[in-house]
Length: 214
Image 1 (tube, one colour):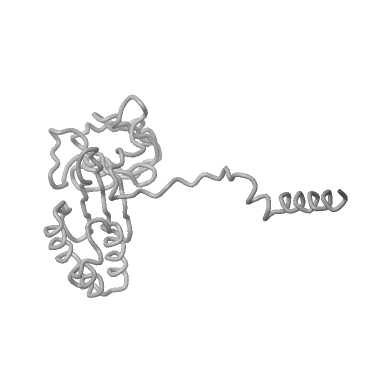
Image 2 (tube, rainbow, N blue to C red):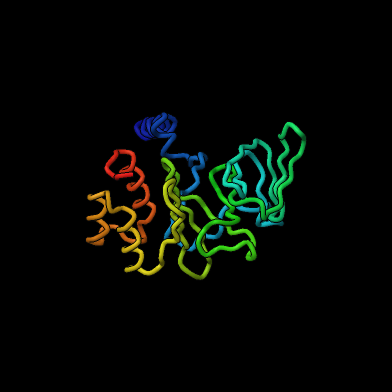
């Protein structure tokens, strides 16, 4: 009996130790899962429950002349953008005057200027998957079809990446043609459309290393 009590005491000390506590008790530290670009996810943390187009917070917006402006307090409701921290009081822009809107954690509403999207169709909702050194990959996740990806680079027009395997491969080989290692992986099929986020990240790194002739 005495040995049994000693054993229970020893087990209790292990459970109360830092190592034992971590194993015996659940962790309540929450880390949101990373976005999986090859899965049919919903449009993400957009809207406010009533208006899918709603955005509110700090960010930047691009006007029709191509210029970007910064704001700490802005509200977008799908039809207009209201800037609340302007020196002259509130500023209001019609949605047609906004080309792109970047709010909080690098999410975008693209109003104009991207392939396959027109103002007449209303705001297009995109999630930013990659934003490295001016190279951006935006994604839209339709519920019943393949994700749509748009590649944005500082020195080229936005590129709508094809959904078909062969056409995607040809398009990406043209983009990364000055990055030999990446070109080889795409050519031999090691990196495919399902790995588009990895491709774009490595492409951005290639530019940083100066292996691409820009």
